[in-house]
Image (cartoon, rainbow, N blue to C red):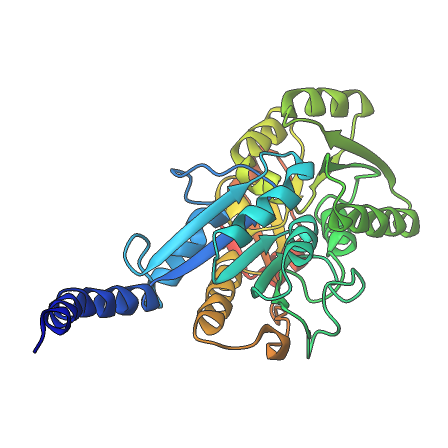
Length: 330
């Protein structure tokens, strides 16, 4: 063996094995990007950015080991979403979880190849995000938190049933241009008109809940609908405390908001929804095509009532409503 051949052989022996190990390690690590218009707090267990890695853990993905999570949060500035989406593309994530229609739209415009999982209450077909629910086409599929519409009208009906005397009701929504917020507003206004309810809309600007509730007071409403929004999940304690302070019976989106002191909620199970999101991410990690994964819709909606909160508010809830509840918190 000549000197040049010997050096080549030594070099191959030194470097071939490490290169093989590196390739195997990289192949076993998955990178998830989360695109979210809100704020992430690592210590807050109710937030999606903490729920999803926990749900993925049950499927064998351990953050810091075989799972890397790239979190891109817009901190309430929706104009940042396109730039954040491009950052995730540059990071070469395997899947993007986009929360809310604004995030999905930004992610869809940033990439046509990386699979996108949407989590929203917006009709993705009407919004132009997928071709159909059964066969989405393209690179977007995902999980809806409602089977149809936004449930805003149904929540108003349930609230009216819980508080029959309520003729003036406030609808609390965040300052958000997303389609879902506008759709909720349209649905609840139509329902209020048919029910003969005087509806007042109060917008929370910049997370200033104290000012929002101060604006509610002079209207003297008898009940409150808290819009379905990730900001309101994040800030649920503040909202629940202020609703109690102003003695407003309120209906929310998720069971956890009632478990934490809200009066009632109507919607899908938050645990089931997040597990379904994790299941879709898992399937996409393993090579499934988003075009072939039907957009998931909940088949079961939950009515949850906090009887302790009702007693504090001195509300006698109709027995017929309590009998229909899926969970009654004593």
